[in-house]
Image 1 (cartoon, rainbow, N blue to C red):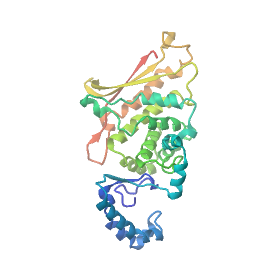
Image 2: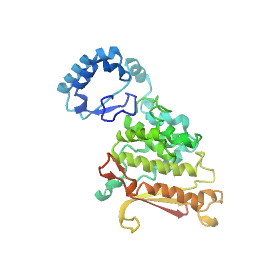
Image 3: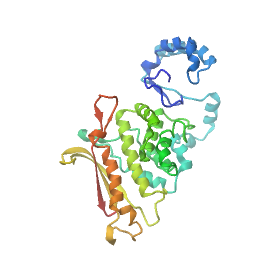
Image 4: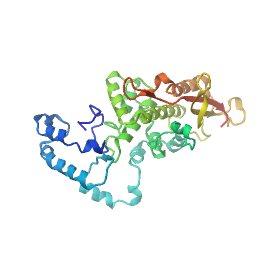
Length: 339
């Protein structure tokens, strides 16, 4: 990890760290570094581990010759004892998603329904080639969104000064740092989604960590973290306690990919998010009136809409490195009455 292109690497947990096989088999720099006094300054490298470096390098060389072509190498944490105990668990338990399981203690009463609501804001894979670029990467599946919904309210009691930074560090040194079986991509993605869901300013000392966390993901994945985070923030504002009232839902979400119709001139492609709210004034679809008021207030809704649409504007698109081409998707949001 100390040799990663992302320096300093933002997650100090070896479990889930991934490198390309071409980088993995380059052992010479590590062997040279292990032979110097400088190695004692590397996090979690003991004298015993330094002495094992030549043997590990020999094993890696043997693997490159004996095994078929490998694309990536994923590091794991745990020994024979953990593996033996894991094997004794019921298959049903072993098949549980570790990210969902780790977030269950923070789950609110309506987290499952809120997760389904957020998931409906993600475009489904399209068979039309021109629209495929507007669908989220496979990383953002239903299990990932379930975990987001489970833990999205944990930072709500924090002060505005600490909320965004606490969320950003939640999977590296915060609430979920102890969770086993998570790839660094999932750790980074969840932290970035929670960070954007907090809608707070990030102190300058954490900006470098934010940039390095995004580098773990592809530029497309990093952009979708912003979109999901802002949709999550909107849902959190509608259900601040994480509970859908017995009278029924306050909103519903629907999304579609479009090849035109967005932008000031209505000619740009992208994704169109529809927010459905109860009918104002007691009309059809208004329920019993309990859902009216603050959650259908125009100013309240407009603030959430602006924040979601903002990431679709070109000047707010993400770039991998300074000077490189930016990535983003045009986002249009409309509000309709009638659930």
